[in-house]
Image 1 (spheres, rainbow, N blue to C red):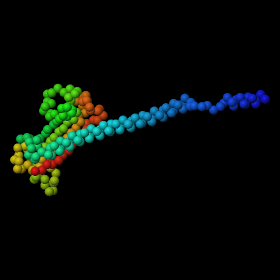
Image 2 (tube, helix red, strand yellow; image 1 turned 45 degrees about the horizontal axis):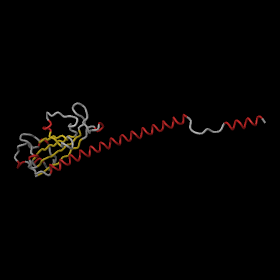
Image 3 (cartoon, one colour; image 1 turned 90 degrees about the vertical axis):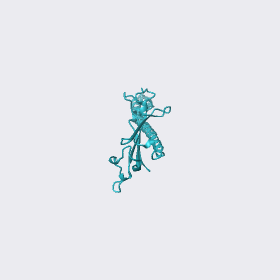
Image 4 (tube, one colour; image 1 turned 180 degrees about the vertical axis):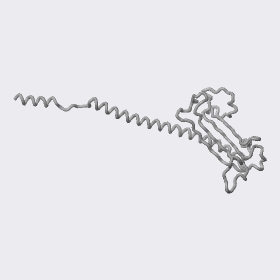
Amino acid sequence: MKPRSRILRSTATSKPSRGFSLLEVVIAMAILAIALLSISAIHTRGLTAGARASVQHRLTLMAVSRMEELWALPFDSSRLEVPMGEEELISVEWWLGVERGWVAEEALAGSDLTEDTHPIYSLETRVTQYSVDALAADDPILDLAERLPGGTARARVHLKEIRVRTAVLGSRADGARPRGVPRLLGRQFVALRLIKAI
């Protein structure tokens, strides 16, 4: 009888273990960590793409707004007139926030910009003027060599090319980012062009 009791005792003590071993827990944690890192990388890329799209949308709205404003002006408006002796009218403005709005570049010359007043966006407007003779049937593209200088008789100016470019400013001259410009956005811009005729 003794041998039989030994067999019974040994089977009674070798019951299957419940729970997980340390090795199984470590492997499960490693798999979970890899999955979470992958998800966080995808999430970060999604946030960056969303921020870039938001800035691109804002730049587009600014450019379209300025273009519509210039389109509504009369053809001979002083805001669309190329200065005497110049090849084109160039106007640069900086966005200083909702409180101050767009400020001409000349107004900022010599001013001491702080973190609160540093421009976030730039808006450049260029106007060039042409005669209708610049549009030939075989070459309908306006060439810069065919533009008319400022001071040309109004009767000879039939077309005005208006170009508007808005851009986000990535950093200040000292290398720091202006407040409100995320580091990952880089330098983005939107450029629009239209031809206004008499």
